[in-house]
Length: 181
Image 1 (tube, rainbow, N blue to C red):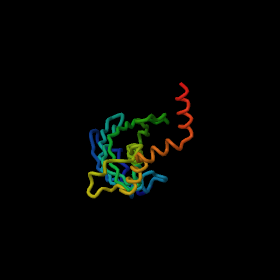
Image 2: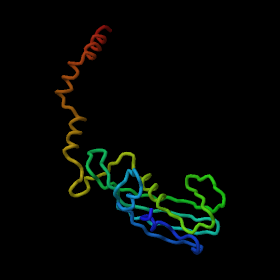
Image 3: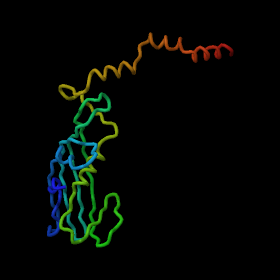
Image 4: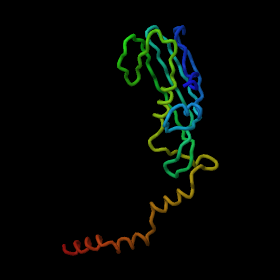
């Protein structure tokens, strides 16, 4: 956890108002999270902290890439990710039930570590299907051999289609059924 100290914000004694923090998220950051789906990234994050008398409002704005495997061609790609997320931090001496975008901390807390929130927001920004238009890059990072194999699988030639219909006993039985009408 000592590697995540830079993500611990001093909130005790912080003046009321808006404070801005800049972070660069990379491989070193993701190494601190066990079984992470992300191991490498290059993400710039701006955190705007609005301190108010009874709460903190945090806005996380990030943009960059993560290193992952393309779901289309299995090549290693730098997948673009970005997002803007908000978190409300309220003060409470009692243990409160946390909500999706609201957490509670003790009024005497000196620091607020935002590393876990940054990690979760980045992971949630990863699309379910990990592909992007890599043809715009020079040279394209796509595995061209894999894409050719996929195209061949999707578009069988006309000869194969005709043979498939003739050899299939199901089609023969269906043709007999049609003649009985």
